[in-house]
Image (cartoon, rainbow, N blue to C red; front, side, top):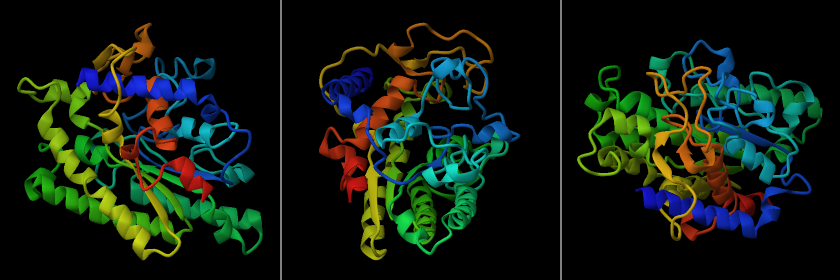
Length: 359
């Protein structure tokens, strides 16, 4: 697994070096960008919630501008930040918790750490803004945008925007894989649970469409069985990862491409795409650069997040994970870049984000 992940980093770095213009756009490619999801996208919404799923303290943000702990679950920028940069925005899309005034015309980030497709997912950590609640918040934003535009062109305006969703991880990590706290693993086989998630996710994406979304990028789930936290919790039986977890998650991922096809075929003018994070992480040339793939860069507390005010590793560029769950800024750049401009055909289906926003 180590070699596989480093191969991925090499391919990504190769792409950055040979495509520097991807990192700097002269103008905004879409009028607005909206983000939905969990801690991979959260840039401050959980700061205002009663939850242990927070990242608004050092060492989080140590590599963010001015070394600020903003609530991003990383040492620096997250995937949403890089995507906004690639799209030509001069600053990150603001979190719903603080977005106000005309800035919402550029978009809003609704993501919430520990949130899931299912409302109960992440409840063990405290409050969180589930996907259903994020859609309610987006409805509020749409109403505010309508007032700001003061015209009947809002549907046309929203149809040109990009909507990016990265959610589902906590339906496994903080639900299905916690049988002492949640009954889902008793009620459903892994295949049944994946189907239940897809059915609910389909309804949520259809709701997003009804609120004006037309260009939608849906991220798949990563190799959750390779997270340091899961390696510490479950036996690997000699494998580099917890294969049973990766197998369970693949049942969900394998249903996403048919879901995308179904939405595009049945919703007029819909242009949904699938970003295959698992495939991205399994592809690439020979290894270089990243050397630590199964341990966190920071000192973690009992919940797997960085312990407060502790000094993290100095060689953060060599680590895949910052804490027991979340990637370093380098990995966030890698995932965002491959999602935006696919290096391999397997990265995105049927097209990547760059081509989606051009349509």
